[in-house]
Image (cartoon, rainbow, N blue to C red; front, side, top):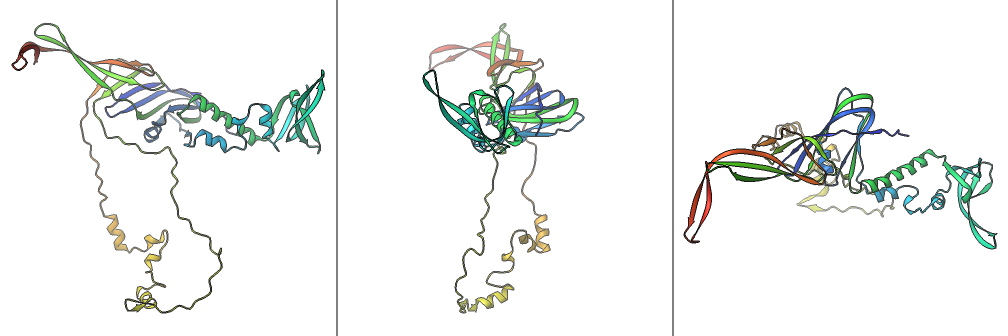
Length: 392
């Protein structure tokens, strides 16, 4: 049975937002192993998380990075031998455990060991009324059937370790469905003991950051130009005292489906010998293009009508190529060229930034005195004068 690792937290330290709806998030901190670090993301973020996840740990290796499969929780629960969702209490749960080895503790220190047969009911008269009583029927090691009143049962130990672990897994799934509905969980597992530094970085979708500019009058010749960035934190986590960078570029980004399991389609070959052979019928010579099938087969160097190379199967297809053809394929260009393109401009915020979860913030990025003067523009068609500014 796998030992449950204690949970460790790694705080968010850096956030970089881009103009194409992707954000870069970096966590740094110390962990005391063995432990596990939980990363929670939404269903629309899991593919980008798997594509970009980077984990760096000082001095030791990462044991594993695991995450939930794409199978819905309802389907996962239906794969177990019994279903906790349909149980309203102890009696209905035990009724599904027929044949399970158990030890039943009841009536003080009395206990009985055996396998569950089922639930039985009986009636008795008490205070002039007929009362229905339920019993747990157990087939004991002494080859006898024992009826234990359900009301007197204090505890029931499941002796089969695999079934007990299965029950725990169901409870974990039910808890997960309530605690993190519609969210995905990744675990970074660290098996080695001791404290060490760890860095976890990834890129996931995030709303683009926006800008707003305004001019404030100082004197007739001076103007104050202010610019603010509007940042949205739609996550379920506070961005507390993070180093923030706002990048104006929009690099190329794509979605690669990595989370959902992919099962390729394969051909089905029918089993041989299922049907009996047809009666033997002598072949007649059939002329095709002036030659019989046997004559055409002799010219192609194979048995039957198909050429020898066309009869290859699986890896044997590659074996049908001669050396010249292989050399030609190796020297052929694939038509892919890598090149860095585009320019970017970024704002690095000097002071740490805090943006609470599910909220937005206005962050100053520009504040500068510029020269300018008032001018008047007269519109002949509109017959009115409007104030304007001329900036230098």
